Image (cartoon, rainbow over all chains, first blue to last red; front, side, top):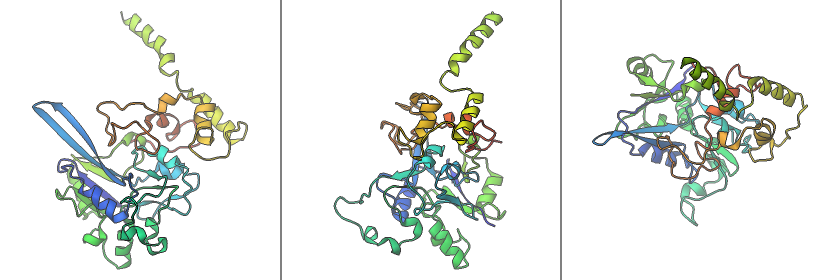
Length: 218
Length: 117
C-alpha cells in the first residue's frame, strides 16, 4: 500500500506563498484559517544575514497525536497514511488543536465569506455538491487533507497520484521554485523516496515521536 | 568550588520542577480519574470549567503560564508572532509541557506522543 508524503526543499523556497494561495482556493479554507502557511526565520547579523521560509501544513503523521486526542474518534488515518477529519463526527472539542505539536489544525468558529456581504460561486454551492472533505461548517476543526479529493479521484481513474497536475496536491505544482515534491514513500522509484535517500532531510519536532510525513531538505 | 556548584543544583531542583506535579503523582491522579474517583466532569471541551481544564489546572494544578504564553520569543517560529496568542491559533501553548506526561510510557494512560528515535 502506498504512503503519500511531501518533501519541501527549504533551500529553494522563496516564501512567495503560492502554495498558500493555491491551497486556499482549492480547498476554500475558512477566512482567517490556513491549511498551509509559511513560517519565517531570520538569522545572522548584517551584512551576513539569511532568511529561512518554512512552509507548514498537516504533517500527516504516522503516529498522529490529534487522532489519539479526539474524544469523538473523528480523526482517522486512511490506508494511504493520509490523516483526515470527519466533519460529521467532529463536535469541535478542539483536543486535536491542543495535541498537535505543529499548530496546523484550525477551528471554524463562525461562517465567514471571503468578500464582505457576498458569496463567491463556490461558496454558494450546496454542501451536498461538494466533496465530503469540503463540507466544512462552523464548530468543526479543519486541516490539510493532502488534497485527498485529488488523490482519491486519481486512484479511481487508475492514475498514479502525483503523475499529473490534477492528481497532485494543489500546493505542489504551483510552486515556482519547484521546492515541493509529492509521492509515495513505499515506492523506491518515487521522487520523494529518491530525495530522502539522496539528500539530507529533517522532520519537524522529532522529539514528539509523531513520525511526520512532511520532510524538509536543507 | 565543585561542592558549591552541586549544592546549588540540588537546591534549585525543587524550584525548577515546582510548576509541574511529580510523575508518580500524575500516575495516581490519572488512575483515580479513570476509575471515577475524581470528578472532572463529562463535558469534553477546552473551555475553563470543563473537563480538559478541570484535569490540567484544577486537579493537576498546572499553572496557566506553563502552557499559555503571553509573548513569543523573538526567534520563535510563528506566523502571527506579533499578535497576542489567542485561542485556536497555532502555537497557543508550548507543547513541550504536554510531552512530559503524554509521551509513550508516560505516567498517564493517554499516550499521545511516541518515542523519538
